Image 1 (spheres, rainbow, N blue to C red):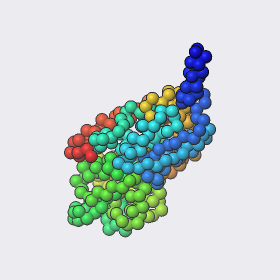
Image 2 (tube, rainbow, N blue to C red):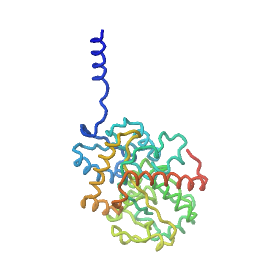
Image 3 (spheres, rainbow, N blue to C red):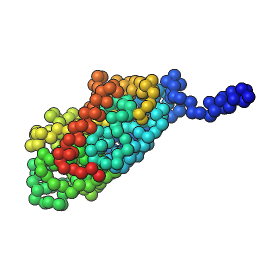
Image 4 (cartoon, helix red, strand yellow):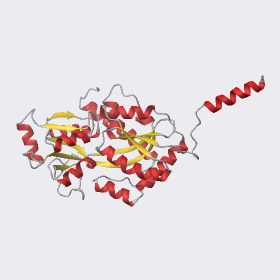
Length: 324
């Protein structure tokens, strides 16, 4: 009888999933969920660091774009994943900072996730289609005021970081545009380049290559100093909207309960990527801001998420925006 019991216990042990061990992790490819469509700032930055991280830890990192509901569709999938280090999520200020104040049915609390680290800060821009009649921000504001209900403005979806940038700008200027949400910055930018929409609030990784290519025009950079990537684009102060300073962020998260040793290994791989000159140069060429060494830790990201959860909750409620 004891022999039968021992045999049964051994069989059950063999059938049970083996716990993730830091000394054997990772033993298979890792999925990295990007919560917005391909081609947007979150996607571009994720791919830059994923390649280097994969080489550091010795396994391929596969990008899966899962857009929708301001990034919360992908955010929920990532949060529900097995906490074994084989599913990561790359989110943003919108999806993992402000979304809780914009969506009643959000299925995760970003403050409870295991932070891996920041990828980059993403300065905000205001851009227009290349043939838009206004050539400066004051001209744009005057044109929008003279044509109510006619000037369209695209963004990456309700609750996304570009949407927050639009809300902030509208609050400061009083301008009223026809809001056109997309499933990510990539599709919105495609329509701006094609002339299907008039303007966009968006972030450096999406905007800078198009400005450099001359397919759109930048009217304003929401920073105190001009960017070397787009030296012709005036700052918000130069454009006459001095209070408009806006920087989003992108970061990597693991599900709640992921073993500490696995989190440390992943964070170490991300930090190694950000310490690489070639990686930092690619991030900077996109007009983005690589985090400083003391800003690359999981603890720093945890503080950022908590602060932005509170800050943007207050901003959204003060603006009278009802959760969806």
